[in-house]
Length: 96
Image 1 (cartoon, rainbow, N blue to C red):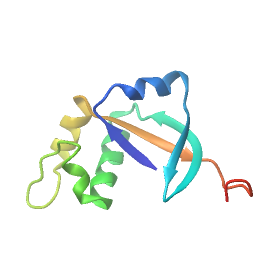
Image 2 (image 1 turned 135 degrees about the vertical axis):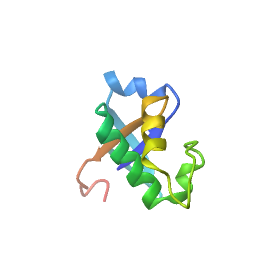
Image 3 (image 1 turned 90 degrees about the horizontal axis):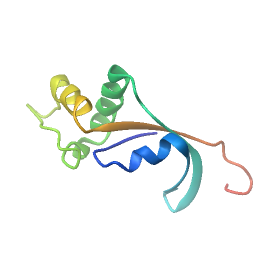
Image 4 (image 1 turned 90 degrees about the vertical axis):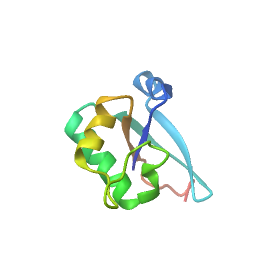
């Protein structure tokens, strides 16, 4: 799972990467890591806007001809957009 933010809350993940998320009415746990490599972060952001086209609006990404150009993704990642990957724990009987 990938997400991005332009807020500073992601800095909490540096010391405390364990997270709980609420997905489709269920609480799941996992580990969140900031994507530090620029090209990996651009790929993650590209996936987000491809799968959820409306994501470009709250992420402040300009669309051209119905898509977000690569140079716009690079601009965002080099600016204040931080990309994060969350690896969810495998389901258990408890949280199944």
